[in-house]
Image 1 (cartoon, rainbow, N blue to C red):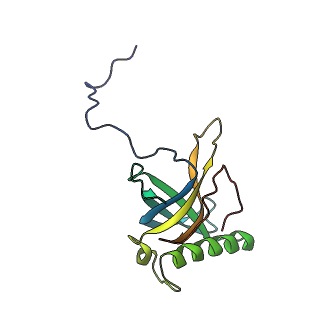
Image 2 (cartoon, rainbow, N blue to C red):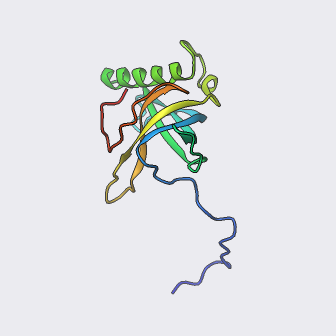
Image 3 (cartoon, rainbow, N blue to C red):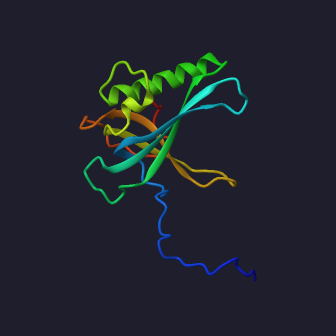
Length: 152
């Protein structure tokens, strides 16, 4: 038994919006983006926070759920940069741009994303990962699965 530092009230402490969603296509938008240094200090990555609006079919019961994605834009490994640039280009095009200067330019613009499930490990729980980006309203395949196809 452990005495708490104060009375704990559950009011207002419901679901945090970190639910793992079924694999498939969802509509969302970039809510936040930050450019961060890598742990090694030899590169930078763009981290985006995406807020889900609905499923591809318009079911909004998942609205408010958030997913994150990182783009390794500066890295001593050219393959990592090539992958990140391809993924980021897919997102930028899904938001209707060919060229941007600031990641804030793609904030609040709805797009579609295909989510898969990373099953997690003993140390980390399962989570959704973004496998593809597409413009809102695009015709997309409804195939589902855990890492069911190559990304981007």
